[in-house]
Length: 328
Image 1 (tube, one colour):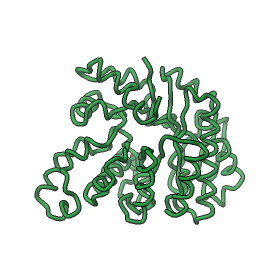
Image 2 (cartoon, one colour):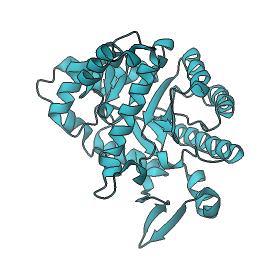
Image 3 (cartoon, one colour):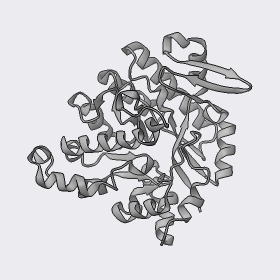
Image 4 (cartoon, helix red, strand yellow):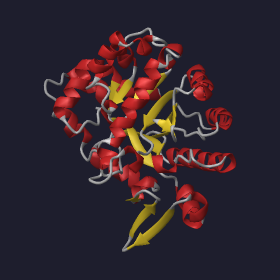
């Protein structure tokens, strides 16, 4: 059976080399020690394995995980939302062209997702038109916020409207939750910060009316939807009780949540079962988050541990849902 990974990260070799040569310009440094590369940033660092920028290494990792197709999206640390306009556009274009080049090396198994300089919405619209025309990406990856700006901000609405018009889907991934979130120590910036960022994004999209204003735009949530499916009852209760939650949102959160798409990266068979029961298998897909350490080493084996998984659910999560977004 086909197995499609909707959540697989890369840093194109052109971007890796540019950061290596111009570390001060990008505010990050690529170092190598004992054969291991690490990307050093002000708040954190992480290993840059060959799977990030080497197509053969990516394909070998897919083979090991029994994946037949992967959607390639940029590692969030190089989104570049914080840069001034010219540098933000430059890194977005270099990333998009690099992702497209990686996907072209094996178009049957790899498909690229675009990135945008969202810190500058007008430039983001220009780059959106360019990548659709030149690279024909089926979707985009965006952060769950643009620095401190929520995706529901009016300045970004034209970008989402154009995505809807173009029939693109939007894969959302936590950007970065640094110490300002009060999550010092124990790797809580990722363990708690990432799912927290997703639920903040979704509630803003819901209560601002963004999801209702753009009913045909398909949003994809990483990491099993963060805390969204598992605290949906609380959001629903708040919506029924608090007038400010209904001011711009006329559709119940439990209904809006079923319009969203989710990867199955929950790290818990019971949580995956709850996710399927809550939103339906036709809105859930495989996601590995590879090559990051918090990803799945055996996504299919993890899926098969889901209690009561039916053949229909399995087929949808393995590939059926993803095909509706990626095409083919």
